[in-house]
Amino acid sequence: MKKLTLGLLVASSLFGCASTAIMVKSDAVNAQPVLPVTVDGKFGGFGDEGSFKVAEQYSGRFTRDSSKSSWFGVVGSSKGGMMAELDSKTGKHWKLQCTGEQSNLSLGGIDFSGSKPFKCDITQDGKTVGSYEITEEHSLMGASKEEGFVSVNGVKIQLAAVKKAQGSAFEAGEPLGYSFKIDGKEVAATQANGSISIQMLPELTQDQRDTIVVGSIASALSWRPKND
Image (cartoon, rainbow, N blue to C red; front, top):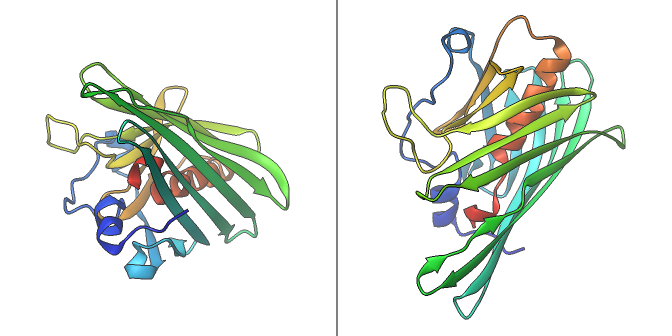
């Protein structure tokens, strides 16, 4: 896959947004301590590979890219992906291999775009222990929503992209962050606009916290097909 140029990296990366709008989240989650996610790598973390830390509790490395092809300006496709390794302070080690694809068909000025779910295979010690999946759905009005789940070692948590900022009546075009829910209740939120940070309810088990961190890395660091 071809690599993105620096200008496009800054424009399309979730780190590169000019806005520092804060995502909407529940009062309970918003009251929790912030776990900062620091990213180092090419172009200060905007590039196609690097390393990260989650509040000294987790660390890891990633590599990512995306590509785009077009035929006569009518039919095209975009692909995106990421591979990442994630280590916890407690000695756990996970690997993520993520891929996604989006197709584009334009006829008479009408866009018929569609995308397959962005998926990650999650392994631990060479064995598949979970998966990540998020799907983008477009409405007739042009707005879109992204929903999915992350599952690790039998712990499954629903997630959704959040495009609305605190104090705003309108939604942004790109996700400002991601909301994680169990039985319909928000239990964590991952801010991905301007910088990455995670907040989680204190009653979560360690396995649930691990699952949310894995899902946060898959959500915030991956390059989706549309980012090409």
